Image (cartoon, rainbow, N blue to C red):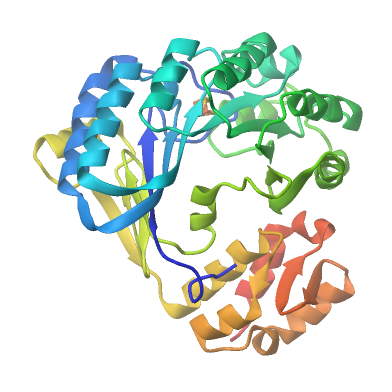
Length: 386
Ligand code: SF4
C-alpha cells in the first residue's frame, strides 16, 4: 500500500546487531558467530550514530534486529540506547522493538531492556517441536522458548511477537496447528508465521541438493499457507501482511509497516538499509569492514540507488499486494499521476478471473489464494508496458 500522500512521516530507526551463537541451517541474514567483536562493533555503531545524528527529524519506531541482538551483554544494549537517545529525537510513545532468541536471555536482562525503553519483544521461537528445532539447528529447546515468553511477561512486556516457521519436511496440517495452538496459549499480541524457504548458499539448500532429506511438497506447503490465516482468524488474530498477524487487529508492527509504505527509515549497523524519498542506501555487510571504516570516522555506506518513478511504482505494487489492505487506488493516483485500474486493466482482469485478486472500495488486494503467488503476480504487473 502506498500511503505517501496521506499519513504522517515520522521516521523509523533500524539497528542491525550482526552476531549469533551459531548459524541456523536456513538463514541467509548477515551475522557472524565471532562474539569477541561485540565491543569493537559497539564502538563503531556509536560512531555511526554520532556521525548520522538527525537533530531535526522525529522518530516513532526503533527496531533492534539481527542476528541475535540478545547476545550483546545488557550493559552494551544500555550503552547503545544512551547514545541513540542523545543523537536522535525519539517521541515518548515510540514503539521500540528488540529481537531476542530463547537461550540467550534471562529475566534480569529482560528487565534491563524494559528499563531502557524497549516496549516490544520479537521472540524467535520458530517451533515448539524439538524435532523441528533440531532440524533448523536452533540453539534452543521448546522449554527454553516457553521460559523466555514467561520471563518476558514477568519483565512487564505487554507487547510480544512470536516468530514461527512452517513448511518443514514431514510437517502436516495437524502438527502445524499444534505449534500454532501452543503459541496461542501465551496470548501473544502478534505472530509472524514464515514459510521455510530454500535460499541460495545456505546449508539447508546444500543439504536439499545432496538429497539429505525430502522437502515438504508444494501442494502440502500451499495447504499450510492457506490454512494459517483462517486458523488464526478463528482465534482472534487478523492477518495484515502475508506473514504477519495481530491480535484483534490492534497490534501490528508499526516499524515494519514503514517498510511497506515508503516511510523514511534510518538503518544503522552492518548491511542495514536506509530509505528516504526516492533514495535507498545500505552499509557494508562485513562487520570487520564496518568497524574499520568507522574507525576512520567515515560513513560505512557500500552503495545507494535512486528509484525512478517507474521503479517506485513497481515497488508500491509489490509492497501493497503483500498487505491484506492492498493498494489504495486514490493514493496510487496521487503519488504516480496514473490510474492503476487503467494502466493495469488487462492484468487485473486476468487475475480477477482466476480469483487471485479483487478490486473493492477503492482498493486492489490479493485473495488468500493470490497471496500464495505474490511474487509471480507482482512480476506480471512489473512486466506490463505502462
Ligand atoms: S538466530 Fe536468526 S539471524 Fe541468527 S542464524 Fe539463526 S535465523 Fe539467522
